Image 1: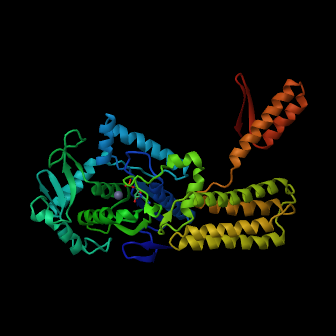
Image 2 (image 1 turned 90 degrees about the horizontal axis):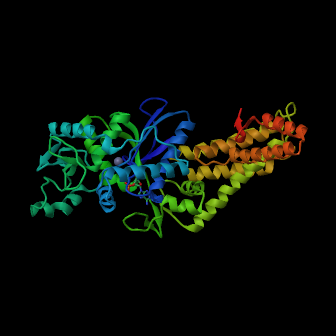
Image 3 (image 1 turned 120 degrees about the vertical axis):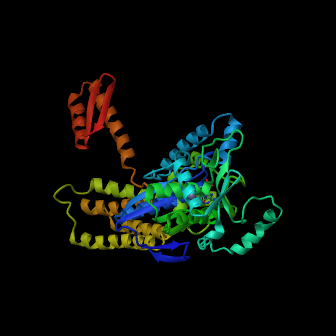
Length: 471
Ligand code: AMP
Ligand code: ZN
């Protein structure tokens, strides 16, 4: 499997640190509002990467943080007259709801910055001891010049960046030794949350949070660190500097970055005000459609959001769901046990069906090319539509259906709405049974009970009415 590594700017074969295991850290959102669909892109893309690793048999330790101390959170708290913690609690809860609606699985661990302050103080102390950091009037800075590798991720011309920030140093308005030095700890301001530290009361800088949480939950060296491309510089560059200078070992082997979700070809962002929240989109569309839309482009290609593209995602997804529905119908009507073994012809056809699975894997192995992987699913759907019929055996129909469902599951797309349909069907049969009982047609009522039992449904006649459960 190959992944494009921002560190080397090349597609590289993925070799895990520990065979069969993947450790992955994905920078999460700052929680001061509902997340927008730009924030949803890394969530969906890297959740899909995780699902694909698991499909290939890896055990994935997936960590994604919530940044819950930040200027914007503090501003929102002041605006509402509540604590910062109340704001972040609220939007973490809302974010988790959005994730569930997009079928983004919860991370193995979702650390919160404010719960990890001790670890941050410890890392800053080590950096000061090793001379990689210095304190001026309660602010601690990272000394970028001391790190010969600084700049290796963003491949930027550091001299240009330095000269851009030099004027402040010359006029003495900045207390930094170098324009590229960045904050590890800042002193408290009136009305802001703070923690006690060797450098006075204050709070951590943003970059140190991820270095500390990644180390705590995944170890000093991890397989994959990921996030949106705007994080390459300075956030990820600074994370590398802090972690590697503190720990003395490489921080992450592979750095993955998704391109932006744009609107009218401009980055969707809160500051530009050109965004839709996931919640707003949910009012109009099933969020499976949003997920499909996101995965219809390669994660490193910019993607422009539009109603037309959402409509075509909608009809494309419907085509897969309809094919699966049709296969379910055919399986239900196929000759019952005894006659359901696959014919020789069908067994041969299964080789073709598996071939689409290989096509899917080839696409995903090529730097998670979900666009091509979706194309493989469509080739399979087309094949199923023309090769499965009323005369097919149940075993064959089920196997074809299973192939579609399991590939879609890797993409996090639910195309087998089995449970919902079944629930409706159950309710309808229960109503029929109640009507039969009312009409004193006990034979019919018993027959329906038997039919439900065969479907694995047990009825419970309670004082509050009929309840049911799956056996
Ligand atoms: P933030 O809350 O701004 O730190 O963003 C959380 C995550 O969303 C980061 O990985 C960002 O890179 C990513 N992100 C923010 N806006 C966009 C966008 N328009 N398109 C893609 N990713 C984005
Ligand atoms: Zn981060």
